[in-house]
Length: 542
Figure 1: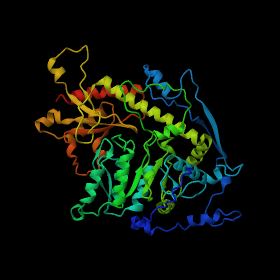
Figure 2: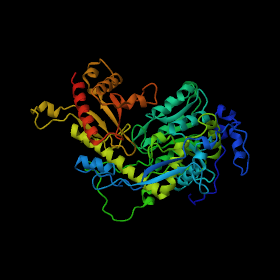
Figure 3: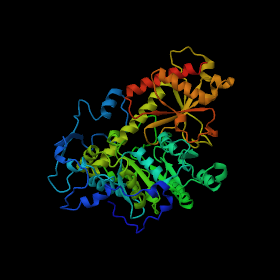
Figure 4: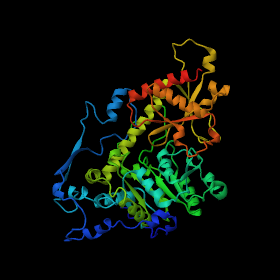
């Protein structure tokens, strides 16, 4: 764990707890666990199955080694070799693994074992994993106060739902980016808790817009109290793919201090921060210097935790994007008050994270050690950057992709925007009107992090809009259906809108879509982009 000491303590934020959270008591049965851990205690209180009756004597796995993937994000000219290199496989390289085994009972002190991890357990997770992630958060995120803590959870979406129930009451609202993670909105909606959208730009949530919103809040007109919770995805913002720089985070944090707002920092893409996009792709490193975890971490935008000197940030991290979504594991980093209330909630819902997942991931991280896990994170970061580059390359093959003039206002103001137009093939009959009046179908900014490309389709130039027959929202869904029927599934933009009135004034005439580059192979990306080009050409022709 980080040895840096601040001698600061988290402020008392108990006034932020929801009425439900205040009413939560310790689970009667879970409350017995603190006594059950006492050496020599004869436990006859709980309905614990006996460990001898678990049908697993041990669990074994072949785990990849931490340096399985190169930290370079270069795209090779040969697509097939690019694909195999991406997997760390191929004729010249065997997959390197190491055996992991979790026994039923420990053979040495502190060893991960099935008798403990598969038994009813604490909502905070098994002790070994808690310790690993506490040290990890201290080293990587460096909270600016001393009494912070960590707690294992079952993935960031469930963790956010816990935050909603712990911090918000029905009829209240939470601040979030104008385009945001749909499940964050959906999980709060049944409790009559609504998003309050804040405009974004190329650097995420706009600090001046946030201040203006809070300073001018009219409770009677809005029908709710001024929000006191913010939900934000600051790295690889979902869906826009932008990063909030540290300077902007400081501005936003200061505003949150001024208006007494709790920040829920949902950061699943933190370790997928990319170099600026170049049409040539990344180049192989020329330096022969040894790998440095410290240097890699220094290249990442710091977390809100690094400036949180009051304990008002609840950070959500997940193993879903770095190890496997099916593990259903992640962890909170927050002040003790919030951790204790979140634990109380977990005791009567999930009870505890999955023991199988905890066993395997704990053993994996114990084997890899801190430096090995950072090396793994850096390697898969390079792979996702390479996938981003490959998707844009596939778009450039299917469309005429050129730089657009820089915008002075709006979400992409000051960005290097690329615009995709109808491609005129060399074999096509030259038509001067077609060449100089070619349709500009959509625009995009290469994402700075994450797994998605956010595009704006220029529906303002669609014949139906020009005739006044339909608006961009109708066309957005029609194009979505046309693409799906053509064999390509992307996500329609309205799913991500935090503004229920669709009042994105600067986005009028645009349709929005989120395209994932996280899973498809290079061949599938190329095929999908070719279909996209064909469908768009037909769609804009009538």
